[in-house]
Image (cartoon, rainbow, N blue to C red; front, side):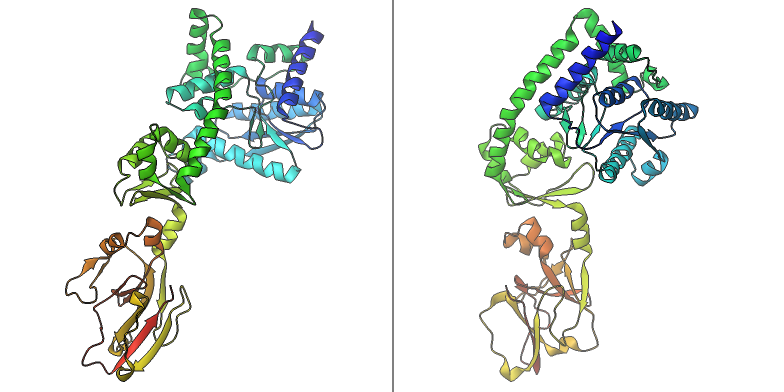
Amino acid sequence: MSADTISAFERTVEAFIGSRRLLHTGAPVVVALSGGADSVALLAVLSRLGYDCRAAHCNFHLRGEESMRDMRHCQELCRRLDTDLYVRDFDVDRRRADNPGESVEMACRELRYAWFADLLDREGAQAVAVGHHREDRAETFMLNLMRGAGIAGLTSMNARSGSVVRPMLPVSRTDIEAYLAALGLEYITDSSNASDAHRRNRLRNRLFPLLEELFPGATTSLLRSVSHLESARGIFNEAIEDRRRRYFSGNAIALAELAAHESEAPTVLYEFLRPLKFSYTQVLDMLGSASSSGARFVSADGAVVAEVSHGVMEISDAGRLLRDAGESFTVSLRHDIVEPVAISVSRRPVAAFSPERLGPSVAYLDASALDGDPVWELRHWRRGDRIVPFGATKSKLVSDIFASAHYSASQKRRAWILTRDGEIVWLPGLRNSALFAVGPDTREFVRLYMPG
């Protein structure tokens, strides 16, 4: 009977690996090993199927002696299976201090998978294998369902996710325990699994047993629905990609056009932005601001910014935005400027003054602007910036000038501003200032020219 149990389990896993092309025998496999039943069974079955396994155990030191017990168990198991074991100690508190708002669970996940990625490179491994099984998949479906996830979230636990593979998805927890018993392999049980403090534990310990009691076979039926959704997801993804080609141009989305022509605009836009960690609520707000300008949205991780301007929404790297906003270059008007942009500078007698038809690409300043050793800077726009336009007597917000010129969000960010002791004297390529304008008392002038 034990031999039959072993053989059936291994045939199931082997067939699943083959059908999904998850692994091959030409390169090592990193096996995530916690010491629990799932990971022990995974290491055992892959080793017995002939894969070159390298076990990886994370010690987060969150459960005192239990954490040390888990590590020792993994060491003993790997000695028995003649498998190389790598152990990494992590400081979860330090990780969370560096990432405020990150939960313990998320911190552990980020630390774990960052290390796995390093191991993949170091060992020349083909994949990281994790021990998820059919009940894990059902639990993930239910968790995402209760979060209001779309089709991608409801089918998120796949056989392969990038470099991570899940060879045991077709087997149950009961199958796993029977397999380990037949092999005579022991496993440890995390005491926190009995606690209902975590949502997944509440599902596992309370909801699924009740579902099976009230609706026998509920888990199997639920997983059948997941399979149906997976089939539908392919068609859904094709439709989303068709709309991506229609509304995306570079890093910009034709937001007003999308809102006007798509009956399911929130779903389409959410699928565009979900990988960037924007929420569905933000998507609704974006569509609500599609016909306006100035709205700005930041992704949940703070890494991406979406800005709406004249019906177009531009997606940008938040770090780059911060760097751009802070860029400021001290320049001299006594010679040509080469950084951050090329501007030719020449000083001439007023007799040589003859306005050119170059628009705001050229600026003429009374040479008295150079008196007193002023500080000249080229920088990007800042909220509240004002300029006195040439021909006017009152200042105007630079943001209003941008709006009149129909500048996009990225054009606003890229625009350079020339200041003298903090006062704006030129918006190269856009508007000249009334400050230091050439007039009847001018003896010399400075010509500035920035090619378009």
